[in-house]
Image (cartoon, rainbow over all chains, first blue to last red; front, side, top):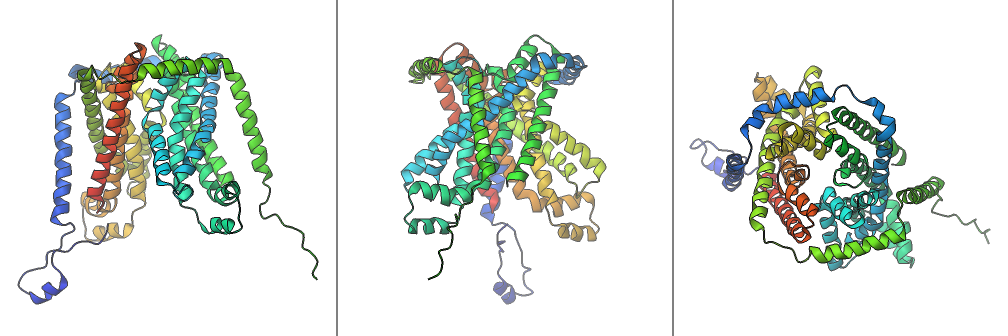
Length: 281
Length: 262
């Protein structure tokens, strides 16, 4: 909250003392009008959507019964299936997430350097790199996976590339922000010694962004573990393929086992990230 | 003349880092050899990519009526899910704040938030599609769950960071619990809550185009079936529509944030 606008100033209060009580208001009339306008537009769009959305009411009433039925079919877990099919698919998922994260760095680091205003002085290049990063982020990883399945056929490669291209936008943006926040003093000192551009990058910029770099990469890896679990639904390898098959065959106990194992892997990944971050940073 | 001091390297060699780099490089080689990726396959892939790109352009907007209908459905899913999700997470977030609620209330609320967060929205969407059938309803329910996981968590954290002085001051006047929340807690976190909500509205817009891939309504379903029917020029049209929708959503949420930021 910034300074609160007051409709009557102290001087006018002193002059008109005992005539009119000072009225303090938190917002100017324009601010209030803008807020009310936002509320009204939100409510109007909500009601318009509720009136036009195609929801069959019977399905809505029926939902709790159907869901209870589904969970009933999921119990007990089919643990015997784990060593046979699930374990290998889980490892493949982890490989997709890790390789995708590593591969994205090849594209993300140069783009981040081109996007950072203090590294690359040309505004046009900054803007071009920014456009690449935004495009990567605005296409969902499942859509990336669909594109790569169309190119390379179903399998792990499509998954790795989808994860990598989706991560470029995220990692590149955060890395560029970290680069822009560094202290330029040491860079100027290096420049004064006549150091070449590569050595300025390696000895000037890199040591200052190392902690940010590792925390960004670890954070993205954690996200990628969750995302790569669903890529198999469009045929891009990993546990999602097994999940999709089990669901198409209505093997609900197997589905439940797969979901629980995904949950365990996600929690484990989170734990690993916390531990590694403490070690590295 | 003083003796020459031994040259000190200002940049220490970091052996841990070097070994780590080697391990990572080894892992990449191992994983790639496992995937069966070779140059022949790359070459075939590049050929496919060339053909795909040539068939994707120019985009085909012939079926714009279908596109518009799906776009509206995606919008409706995002708006309804955001509204319901924001209202529910207002309460869940309040209940999950440990500095306001006893442990017996905050612990279950935290469990609810954790459950909503752990699974990817697509997996939740699949479960809802199987239990309530294809269509917009499954998408709405999915995005409500996703919204609770995000907004309620951050909202609870924001409440835990507030200054308790104002709470004490309001409490000293003998105010009821509801007024305590309304006049001591909410004013301190309201602008952040708006921030979380607009961000979630934005990400709900993105996700409403994706839940259709598993049959939960919106643009994603049409995208997926266009892919399966090899209508690649229509795919481009849908992708362009999605990107336009996302840019619009970003602009809108920036506008709302600016209105409430003062």
